Length: 381
Picture 1 (cartoon, one colour):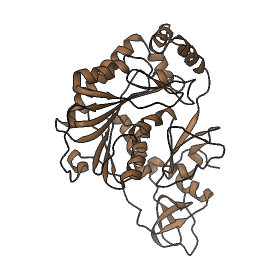
Picture 2: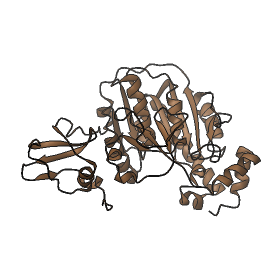
Picture 3: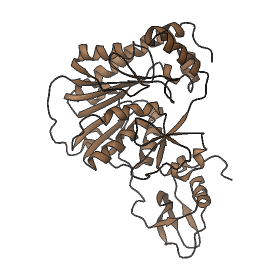
Picture 4: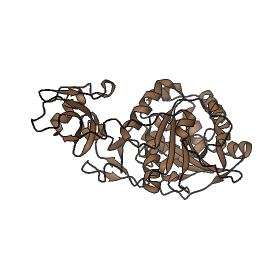
């Protein structure tokens, strides 16, 4: 990895010389692999030797990286592959007052890791009595977000592709998570492009862009509502200085939550550093918007915003359990040969009790209805 000649000095200025040396050393090591369970579908980690993520009740760090593509439970939305540091935003979210009927926006949501983390917490706390909107302005990334939300399978999570400025000026949300595009310093082990594109000018550009994004969406957060502001970078300009700008310019109070070791407490938030934690770099802060105002009851925020709700197609069909070999054939798009006692007509193919998708059993043959865009492309043998 060839770093920009000014990166080391920038890192030292932000986190100190000794911490910077440890982070730089860690950048030459292999990143860890972690998953986060979908508690509505799976209660126990399916991988031996996994260690719990300290700040996530659903997270596990694996001792090696399996071929997730060849695990039917992955395709069933039983877990999400996510860096353990990225789960810290969910940890902060769970410490906020989550009230019945609350409306939450994940503003820069693709590919959907933090969205599904929030969804799990909201469902466990509130049941169906919440609305979560996952937004991604980049159309090239929106498809992945929509697919991941559909696979997760929570009907109270809608997806949207809208510029922050297009949400209007009316308060709509009790909580907004803004995991804004950043210079990506915390992801250097996984993102060569972030390494290549880093420069002091990139940091300045990203900090200015974050302010534009936050200014545009700010009117939609109700007075007294909460902003979770996060980045996957390490410098103060995009992190603490931007949080202080939000407080001073937009009108908010910076809230502090105790950070478990080895998470570093900064002036405004919590910083997870490669080499100190098992995962990558992440920074999270929470601000409470000035004022106090309850939102009126909203009958259907999905319809108001034009958000897409996950499809429930196939959920009411009779289920048919298959083994792992047949499950992979189904996910590959291959034809299935079902026994004579299988239900005729539209059915749901299941593996270990988890729905994979629909098929139409005609008796002598079974038509595979698994979406072509989601099918496994690698060799399954």
